[in-house]
Length: 354
Image (cartoon, rainbow, N blue to C red):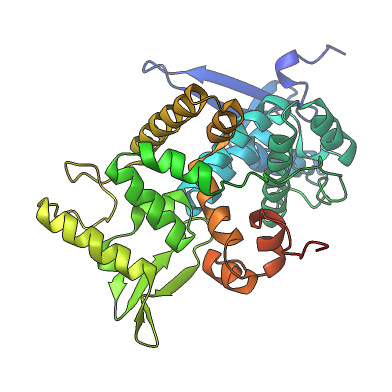
């Protein structure tokens, strides 16, 4: 019996794959059944362009049960990127695409049925970026769950039960000295961003979105991009104005004097909405100036601490300096344990021996 060509070895017996290229350069794939006429002459019977449907038609001609579809992970990734990722937040979309890029390198050409817990564990161990590996496996797990919903496999999720790499939450705490050092070197728009981030306890991306239109009936309305949770921050309590309210009033007054009409509260000196890159540039510049000054003053330890300070550390700083229940609600967490484990970066208050 003549050996099957390499192009068709992944197909059932007597099924043929034809790849054609049109004048426009576009290629398409069709499938055929290597049949015979009544007088025994060879005849290729069209099965269509969809592989799964072609296999069903092949089974009918062969009088056999249709073979189980054997989709590749690349197909799952393609559908996931097209149908699932666009429904997530902008930041999560960006993270997921980076994670998919890594997953494709390892699993793109692998059949779904070939992914086992052992394979996932090998991927975990091979990745040098251990925290990123955890995120990638989490995405692989979700993609596999969605693939089951799509009917692409009925196999158990191979990521279940696979240990993740140990993660140590970031524990950097920006104390008063570090804060003041960076704040002193910051441009006014960066100072405003720092103050608003601290007073609201929100993520950098959400801070930059806060606008005058979010002020409503004594509240500042917050829509968290990552979790889609909505908060209302009181601007006054029992007739007493909050620090947040006083800051916003001062900011609005300065904006009016400078003729800034942009609704978003954090802008550059020209009134343009502050982008994350603009914020990063101003932050890096102020932090470096503060570190250089500390080193010049003979305090290299302070300079090193300043260089570790990231804008995102303002959120846990805020959570660390107020009561736990208040912090958990302000940050939009569903449990106090999350706030305590990841965002509380100061120890318990205790008395000395004397």
